[in-house]
Picture 1 (cartoon, rainbow, N blue to C red):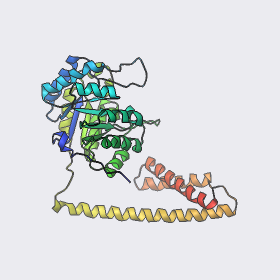
Picture 2 (cartoon, rainbow, N blue to C red):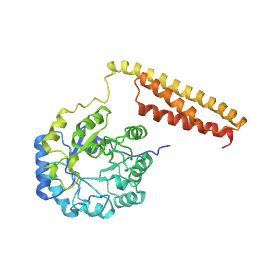
Picture 3 (tube, rainbow, N blue to C red):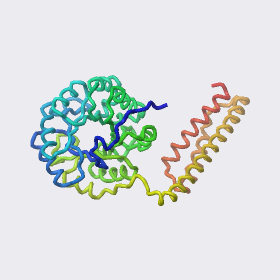
Length: 361
């Protein structure tokens, strides 16, 4: 059961702009670099809602650029003032919070490496007790929805009402086109549980290369998410951090102009067709659940047979035959191999659980 969350309406802190576009350099390197990047961004695009820049950069290994530190906070704030936009920085401990508030930073964000630690998240939340500043929370590095939800709940419990989630993809050991594969099912599940929380997509960290920023941004809009965070630099190739995933202010403008933003809802007179299609999907989903339940019942009968004849639960030849047959049928139906493998692995795991119950394992 999800606890109720006191979340302010999206428009109450986004200025009513949708999608919310947050842009700026990965790192604040110099005062002039921040200011010139921000001025050129605003000149190149009318759709920017908020300025971002990192002053503290948690890196995987030491001896790499970890940000200029607190000296960069007034640079970021001054750049925002110069173009009349709010600014946001990442904070990773209570000391960062104190310095950010002292420099009148408008919005704070919690990074992916911080979200993985409930102790640090709670420390930051406690530092904000009694201060209702907007907070954006990136998903944890690993695909763990509970950690993400837990971080959000820690801030709501100390009185923060202006909250957004930032989806920046998840680390994986598997070979992937993306630096951090989207795994869209996780933010979709977050939205199902807490539909009032705005979800902002970070295609820069998700893709890891600038050529993936536009397609990922369009995917985010197609799925009805609320905003984008895009890293932008006046000279990306010379950036001190994450050079490959940053774009120039002018390219940012092109990306935003090319985006097709889908309307979240249809007019009443147009909704009936969508309603009919959804009703068909619901009927199919109900049938799938019914068939899966029947399959598990048969698995229990198989488990009883194996118990009576002292057979092992897992039969590798049978499993190989199931996969081969499923892949062939899936290909005929236009389904991807990856989807079929994942689906039947879950079905197989559930079948083993049901057989194990019968066999007393």
